[in-house]
Amino acid sequence: MNAPDKPAARAPMADAVLMTDDEYYPALNPVNVRPAKWSWADVHPKLQKLMEDPLKRADRRFLALVNGDTPADNPGALPGIFIGIQGINPGEHIKPHRHNSFAIYHIMTGKGHSLVEGHRIEWQRGDTFVCPAWAYHEHFNDGTEEAIQYVIQDMVGRAYERNLMWEEPEGHFGHMVKGGFRPHDPSQG
Image 1 (spheres, rainbow, N blue to C red):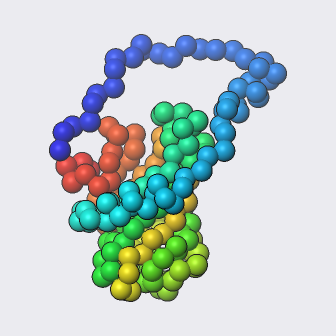
Image 2 (image 1 turned 45 degrees about the vertical axis):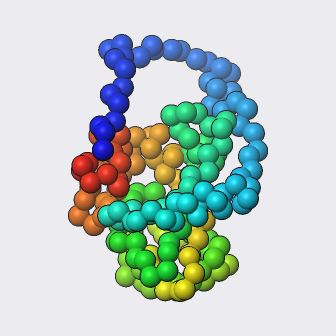
């Protein structure tokens, strides 16, 4: 795998700016973050193609739903929020891992179970469960059809704050600040 591109050289320090409260508070709000919709008719074929790929390490297959109005250096469904659609084929096991972002899972199809800090959570279509930040978790598709999970995380906000961390798979640590760490790239860590 090719090494990530190195960032362009930057000036040694950022510009120091002074703002009054009347200037500062309006600047906190992103401009023009409009509603966005991802159609299942568009998502499903891409997810089906992705489901043909083998799992790597603790990897998952997911599509990130990105609102084009979020900043390029902080892509999410909304500022600070990641939404993904994850697929697990029948019989597959997503190995134990953890990250310091929380995860909310909603099961769209399939059935199986997850272990979250040793607690077995059985799930099937329509169920929702949460995984607290930095909790070890793993997923199992126990059924005969693909499991599709809708996943919401605060990963984008943590990355923007430069404190996003993984242990993925178990025993393999990474931090977003160190060279754009990619948790599923075996050459990193």
